[in-house]
Image 1 (cartoon, chains in turn brown, red):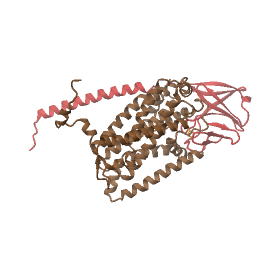
Image 2 (image 1 turned 60 degrees about the vertical axis):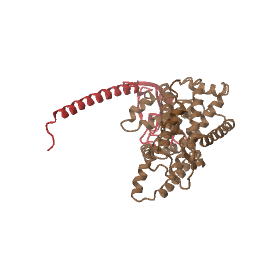
Image 3 (image 1 turned 90 degrees about the vertical axis):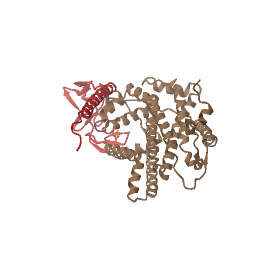
Image 4 (image 1 turned 135 degrees about the vertical axis):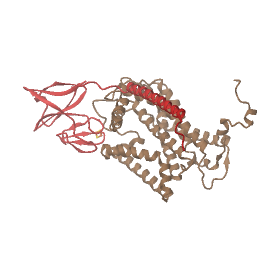
Length: 340
Length: 148
Ligand code: FES
């Protein structure tokens, strides 16, 4: 280790990566709505760890997939616990990502120079959903199987790119063992690498472009030890919460995949239940295009905001109204899903 | 006046443009081949008539589900005769089942409903169920299906 920098070299004015991390943080980051980004980050770490452990037992073949999940849940020492942690970490990660998005949206923290914070963050959110979908497909119970069918068909109905995309995801015309293997590869290899890259990119962009100014927040505090300690406390608190959740609601398993008969209740996990109800209520193409348009506007929102505020729209008010309307609509769709 | 006889500049521009075009073309072809590797090609289709048995096997008003060479179909006998429908919902590909009491096909995924002629009457499905031709030879019924 001859090339390790000595403290003297640091002081010599050369900015090292430590200086970027050690940049002082505005004091408002101690207020909890502004720490919401660190929570999904912590959970992501936990997901990688538990996910790696699960791959030691999981077998991505149609004959063995369900059986191996059952083995993890019922036979492997603490298998149910690791699987439960993995499941609840996803749920909480997506939940806190959504809180984080809502907070940034309402406070308009994406305003220049923060546009790329928002864009990279929205990609992180989309990838998290893709991880959720591929993950629940791997369980290969009946809901997974028909979920794979429905989601791949939906992508397959896109013009031009649809059919090749359908073949790409399914590895053939029908949902088969090839599909499971492809989703497994996406879930355990391609998507995690992409997601990790994007998360790092997002954090870097946030650190480089600085935090949004918040009225009333004047002081600064150093990253280490103050902020690092707060994050540590959050991580420990999360772990306690997760352990409790897993103990109270140990993971379960539906009936195995049956290509001959659709499950009676095909409701996906809660974070997909709103879009699921949306495609139930609207005819296919309309549902798909409205979802895509929504995702597009969402990712490009800082630029939409800029154009509209140049025309004199009161964006703070608009965001409040839009945010409330979307949250209420999503809640209504979710309630509808539990009723049907 | 601008310089017209800048041969050197023009030559450099042209050669670079040709190089860039060639490179892009090569890379593009390569990328396309990799995409072809990942997207399996569809199999050629053939048609054949599959025997499903005597007409009496299908009671009136009842839908009988079967799997013919990978096609999940339901054979239905109504007053108008025997018809064979694909069970694949035209919305997003779940399997519909025949509901005897309602005399309709129901899709559990997004509550799609088809009537006994296969017409989509409620829910998201955009078009009627696919039909297979049913041929009767003597007392025996055959269904024309595509086979892979
Ligand atoms: S798949 Fe049948 S209604 Fe959507």
